[in-house]
Figure 1 (cartoon, rainbow, N blue to C red):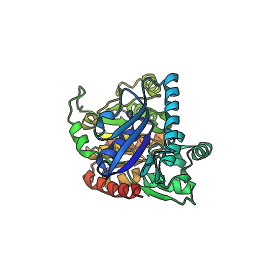
Figure 2: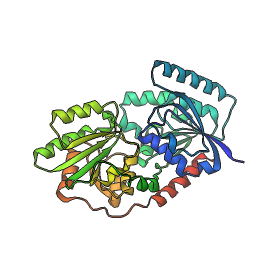
Figure 3: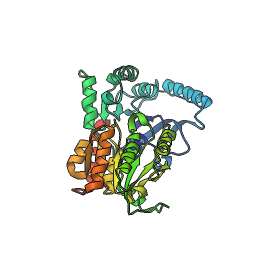
Figure 4: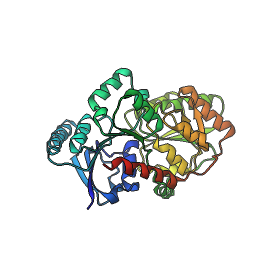
Length: 360
């Protein structure tokens, strides 16, 4: 008889953390060993629901416009789930969102085997005041197990909680290599260019993603006479800011393409992937680029140094100048990847770690 596993997440819209959860469900042994219930607080029209296996039980609290009415209904739904958690218990319960206070409480109520995933370097991504507030509301120390998606994130957590009594482990995000390769073959209107093409795929949130670094580097490189183009795939609250910056700097070779449910054909027409974030948990897109054999230009965040040391790209300083220097180095000398990426072996190690994490 299968055991019961509960996974709690705020939403499954287009995004790195959301995609990592889908890959966890689809690529691990969890779906074979557990009856999985996935709770989502709400969901948008563009989402990853179609990628979930058919035998997963979905508990979607609210589906509709995320307005005042929607938020009230979601709150009421969460209160109902908290009440039910006093009676319904699971063999393991996972809070996949490391910043949702109610889901953290719900997870701890639902199972003694409570697990929280941390998707970022907590110390680097927040001020001391913001970090203290997050730790107070999430009460990470009350979870039985903490899963960090990178070695740097683990180091950060242990620095914050040196006396934590539970288990702290690293489990990188899965990479669905077969689907990525297949999806990259879909036809798109945009064609490969004779110009060197830089690609960025990210949520448009300047506080962490720092896509302005790529735009400003593009301006400096244009002024120096380099010929290239930049493709920006994604959207978010800072999309208008990025478009205005592009317009103000008169950068006709930088194109904003919006969000794409399948971004992988754009990797195939690009020469290098540029990762400009100032803080990250791991960076799923770095593995996507590795699967598709695209060189990486990345800031020194999460485990980027491990990836570049293994021969997959150029490591930059975590700054505007760093991205500029990395793009310039690629324009001058290119970059040849040193080895192929074995995503199957990569995933095997994650599966072993996940199996140890969820068992009581």
